[in-house]
Length: 110
Length: 114
Image 1 (cartoon, helix red, strand yellow):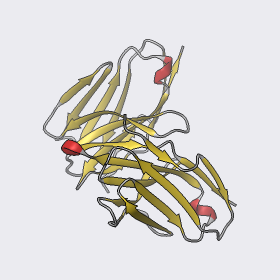
Image 2 (cartoon, chains in turn purple, brown):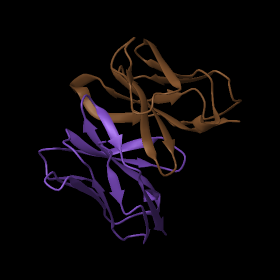
Image 3 (cartoon, helix red, strand yellow):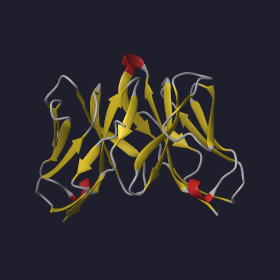
């Protein structure tokens, strides 16, 4: 299975702190994506990093990809209460098929 | 903005009933997907479609079928609902100009089968 696995599974931090999540996967990928899900809602795409990229930034998000270790990390800087959500990594393989990890629950305490 | 809509947010059905979950996207995307989401298991792909009248099985297709008669609409069908199909169902779409890879999700349908 391609399925990504996030680590840690749950994270509780104070507002203003940084949050880091890791994801590992098993086989070759086209790209790796991170999604956010607010409680009981659909997923929202955050950022995509291609297999030939090592780092990517988008606002307060920083994603790294290490294809030799088959792992990625998502860093959220200066967290806000609104960042409270579940975060999923997803690896793309084949024709736009995504394999999702089980998700990280992040709670940002105001 | 891309909009993916699902016919119901909450649905309660009885065991053995035939259940239709509808999904509509308004961005002329070629690709559409149905997932189910369960605690501790993440998202699992049920079926997907790359074009009208085309469908492919995902990782857990048993007990489900799909229909894609029009490009914008992708329906998930539970032929005879069972209690183990109680779950959150998420529809997604992707594609369009430049073949963008990110998927756009609907709000989800929480189905309870009693």
